[in-house]
Amino acid sequence: MPRSFVKEARKRVGPKKQRIRPIIERLAVEHADAAIALKFESPLELLISVMLSAQTTDVSVNKVTATLFQKYRQPQDYLDVPQEELERDIFATGFYRQKAKALRGTMRMLTDEFDGEVPTTLSELVRLPGVARKTANVVSSELGHPEGIVVDTHVRRLSQRLGFTKQEDPVKIERDLVKLVPREDWGRFPHLMIWHGRRVCDARRPLCEDCVINDLCPSSRV
Ligand code: SF4
Image (cartoon, rainbow, N blue to C red):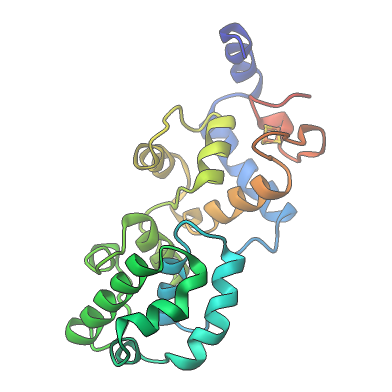
């Protein structure tokens, strides 16, 4: 889009600080079911699912964990089998060697340092082997203690289209978003972006004419 159009569009929709609340409110109504797609029943299952979800789809993780969680119930269970057996059990999620190694390292630390419980703070979660900031953000947020905003491909694309950030790097995007998004919405904001991205604001063919926030979006095509 030429620069003059972008400028004009930004002027038309107004400053992002004024748009953020109505955008969140409208998307919350539109996507009332927006939630994490991974299936889990405990903080441990959540952590493992998120670790397995790297470079694959939530659907394939859910398929694997449906049987995995029947067999492995405690952190120690992951340590009681040979690594090769765990690799076979998570094979379908891809990158199974690295993931099995990370899972076992994390289970070892949970057992040794956290009484077998999953910590809730970001600073503790990122100490776990193979748990990067994004994974830690998802886990702490789902456990009700969001300390940041999860930035995935949908959050990045929509935040850019909505004029919330000009950055490309997820860490810098998160920095812009935490200044803008009200603290109480840090947990639900990524879910709203993800579901709106999947259902309406597609990467290649955004359905601007059907979008409930098109009057607040500087990238709207209508
Ligand atoms: S108006 Fe279009 S570009 Fe903007 S959020 Fe909606 S679908 Fe995406």
